Length: 538
Image 1 (tube, rainbow, N blue to C red):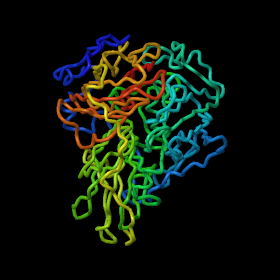
Image 2 (cartoon, rainbow, N blue to C red):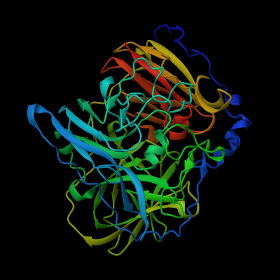
Image 3 (spheres, one colour):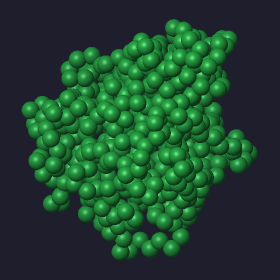
Image 4 (cartoon, rainbow, N blue to C red):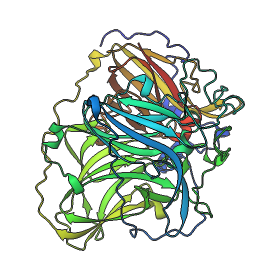
């Protein structure tokens, strides 16, 4: 390896890292148990809300498939889409209407499908009562369209002055951020999509209020495709299913329960003390339906899985009613296809992670049921959804031994520097917070400066569960706890799930675009409470 550069990044202690002993102890002021205890209950970095309504039995509602959005125009080599962010209501629990914040009136929002290298411009119209920001998670996007948290689209009549202070002591409208770009009512986001085919997702990224905005419904899928992937012969058409998994809880009036300090989400960010580590729901939704059932052929299916939960972790299994398990054959990760398939009996998935898996129902008898269960859940949260095999059918799909040959081959010797970051609870402006390198997020501070084209190794350490996400770039996981990566770490990722007390090394190349980006924990409550940092690519 080249000599490591030791310059101190502005505003962040370059070598400020927790030892393992320190990582296992949490500040009692947060009201959390120790990380060691959390490691024995790995879904429980957070507290669970209980619904105040009777919940339906599992596997009754049919699995909805989010509609694919038609472009409003295709002239000039760019596909243009229109999305209106607005309030709507939907029947999620039987016979109950639930108010939502939506993209185009649906939860999840409409799916955008695009071709690799063909630009897309999405015009977002904000008809909600609060500012919004849109981030295309996993997108290789110029900074102006990446959805920086203070680049707000303001609603009708919104006055910035006098609307509260955010977690860093700055106005949550970014009044201390001289680089913030604000627009009224409408904004165009342009995505070049010069990247590997994969499953991306878009969601609100407004500073201090990301968690409740996603909880209320502001999330949708964006799929990038190309000819080479389609030539592989993986299951396609109606045998390719997007699965957006999210937990929620319901109040007595049918609304989504959430412990916000300011239910209007206008001025005071944060959640009540019991939920500082994250908000968990007691209802598991897939594509917006509770514990749904999908009628399937006795054939292979490609499942494009997103964990869109705020804080809940899952470990997924496919289990027949007689107890036998089917393999989950992973063919892709956050940033696209693996080099070769990896078979799992169970697959952990943290908030914001995506996995592309193939499940073969060919040997399931007609009438047989396969449940997708969550090994980390208990009671009702142990079930996710089910498949009922209803017919025999021809199947010409396959899972080839070689999936992709274009994965980057970065080596440690390519890295021009190594950086260390701790992700831990701490005190922040006299209150509770979640910190990176001992500091809460401040949009006016540059935390890390990287040169365009440089390869770097980042060493990360956590106190409790922290799914760490880098904007703009994908990365490879080099190690966990000084050992080899886990099987599900294969491929190119943009989110890595750190377990309590765990360290990990990742390697990436900062290519694509110059500008201001972010890295942060994707436990959405942690993110809102300071666990985010600025990355400047020069």
